[in-house]
Structures are given as C-alpha cells and as structure tokens.
Length: 333
Image (cartoon, rainbow, N blue to C red; front, side):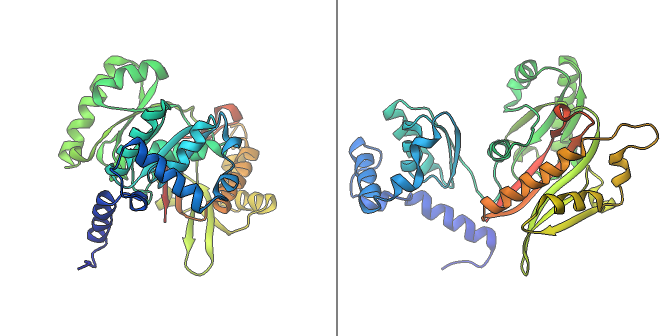
C-alpha cells in the first residue's frame, strides 16, 4: 500500500527502481554481462531508431555532458564513444553500479553518482551553470583528509564549507568559514566547523567539505527563478547575501525576458544607486548583471524541469574578470 507521506513515497520509489533498474525489463539476461548490455542497446535503438539522429551524439565531441536519470547509461555511452566528457546521475545505487560496469567494459571514463534530481548536487549544478557561461569560483569537494591538498591546488585564501545535500543554511550553523589564509588557519577552521556541526546535530549529514576559491570583495546580488502556479516561471534579481530575506530588495519578471526587461529589472531595485557607485566607489559592471539575467532566462527556457534556482551571492565588481557566482542551489521537478 502506498503511503501518503512524501518522504515515504519517495523512498518507495527509490526501493522499486533499485530492485528494478530502468531498462533491465527489456531482456531476460543476467544483469551486468556484456551480452546483457548489448541486448539493451539493440532494443533501445532497434525499437527507437530515430534516437541516434535526435540525440546528435557526434556533436558533443570534447564537450561536457550531464545526463539526469541516466538509467543503464545506454545513451550516455554513445556520447562517450563520440568523445564527450560525460557525467551521469541516477536515483539508485543499482543503476549507477551497472553504468560504471558498462563503461569499464569499454575502457571509457565516466563520472556516475547516485543523486536525487529534485536537488542537484553542487558539482552537477555547477556544470550546468558553467555551460551557460556563469563565472564560478574554483572548488573541490573532498573528504576531511583531502581538504589541505585541495586548498594547495586552489591556492590561498580559500573558503571552507560543509557539504551535504540536506544542509541548506550552512552559515547559520557554522558551516562556512571565509578568508582562510594558510594551512594552520584551515586546520583550526575545520576543527571548529566539525564541533559546530556536531553541536547543531548535523555532522552525520556531512558527506564532505567544499574548498572554494575566495572571491574578490564587491557588491552581492542574487539571481534566481521559481515556478508560479498561475503564471509559470518567474525570473528574479535583487541585492543578495545573507540578508536577502530581510532586505527583500528584489524584482521579478515573467518569461520571456528580453534585454530591455533585464535592464528594467536592474534599475528597478531600491539599491540600484549602490551598483552605480556612491561616495567615491566605482560603478560595478552592470552590463555583466544584465547579461547574467539573460543567461538565466535562457536556462529557464531550455530546461522546463527547472523548478527553483538560487544564485546567492553573486559577487559583482567594476572588473568583469573578478565577478563570481559564489553559491547556488538548483531544484528540478
């Protein structure tokens, strides 16, 4: 009997697909054998021959590709054979294990992980944002013992953040430390953070630590989108940072969003004079903000399953090369 509780229902869905990975029903062969994978591939493209031309596998050579809900990795494999750099996420360990086995048989690289696409993992959301031209801070997600080598690769100063899919407001519980200048400071930050997370009873929810490039100082803005039941997708812009929900200096626009709409959004917030520069401050790159709103609108248009997106903060400076998206959260439906 299906339970009405949302989390219980989601767990039942996970349990079902873990016991019956998508695509295994098309063959009676033993899962994971080469004959099994070959038969699944023949079924996929034999019953749906149009898929090869529809997917345009050959056009992704040298490009990064993320497939959400990769199943047995049948399509993902075609992209990899054509020279794409592929990442696959799926709901269950059983599917991911089969994907990894299939790619190993062909000697092809793949990054495959279990993920609930309702809330994309940070690294996968980062790939999507980078594909749309958003400038992200360099980062690595590592276990505690690799935090120091990650910081050495990125270069000090760095930011340390607790990483866990169920940890949302990290700064409220001591899960973010900025401006870490050297290894000794990083050691202290990691020790203090683990103590704070344990005090907040979320240490067991941490699956790693995000070591991130420290962005330049600048004005903090927020970009985002949400779905309205009546009007559909809404694009959002405003002054960002940790006080965004208190200041509430934000504006919304219905899709589609033109360049004129984007300019009106930027000029429509109360804090617009801060972007132009006050008391001797330089004007930030407002054109960068306008272009970022348009990039966001293009994402919303291209990805109909996008239910919610927050880019906060986005650091904007007078120099475009120093502007960065620092943190973000993406949810699909």
